[in-house]
Length: 439
Figure 1 (cartoon, rainbow, N blue to C red):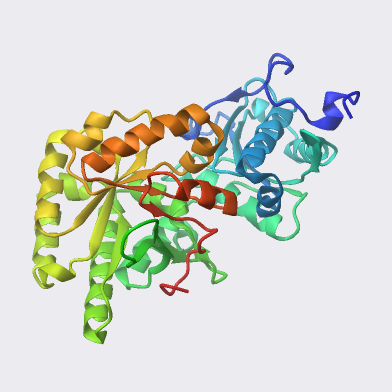
Figure 2: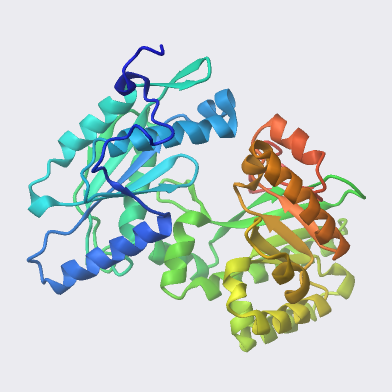
């Protein structure tokens, strides 16, 4: 195996042997910003400029690979696939990782002369013809690829990426190891029924938005029901569309506060139903944007709604991303302190070792600190990080903050995280999100 050519083994993990002049790697946020810039340039050119194309590359059978090599192995596999793909792209192209198993690409159109079908076929051949080595293990993998020219006229340019992501997911679900090139995404203004924004606004208007529940499991102390409540849209095929798809569109179009308010009203209704049935209280965790902090009218509405519940039944935890609050610490302190005075729990999400303790433990009132989605994987793989986390956990508990670790996907992660100073754990290994709590 060691004597094989790198193009056969796929072992391009450290980047040291990669050729010069490959596609540029950026963050997901940067790629989205570049897409928006290129669409703006194409609009300004009035049709004389060929717009950029977007591609979505998804690893097939991610769960099987994860079960075989774990999260660390999955990350190494995706890094190797990413490197292999970059060798087939052109220097003006831009790539970024999205989540655990996907890569987004902006393809330079080369004045419209680029053969996207041939490119997709070549990328498939590159990956399916490679073996990816992990110590003594050799792993074969396939991908699904969707490509389409960007429509610069879409009101939300990011919708171009959402469209190819759904295409790639469909290809992967149908067996994978295939590619598809499609025409540009239709304008959401001309095809509103199929746009995520139109679906969301309609769901909010007619109260047809769905929610799913995922339990949070306490590692110590008295047991109580705790659920993360997540919004879902109903797709045209009846499937549930995850929030990660439509939240960015809602945020870009200013619809996020309406979604926030709907989620709060819905969970308060769940609490009232539970009281009416005589059930034991359950705690519900819901994500919120900064609207509660920025809009006094929103906070006043929330306070008025809470007065309809007995203080001991206000079993709701609102979660805010730490990055959104750092830019508005003064307003956040006041609003979050008000929520806690009303008996509402407050959680900060997106926590890792890069966020100063002083911000979380002294300047922002809160009850819970939720670590980043990739934290469980990293803390198990990096001994130094595990040691730093233990010190941080001691400080957090001294400040009366509870620690939540999400995204636990295998038995080893659950076992090892359980032994650390954490309070709540959550993940698909414990239970997949369900439309019924506790199922």
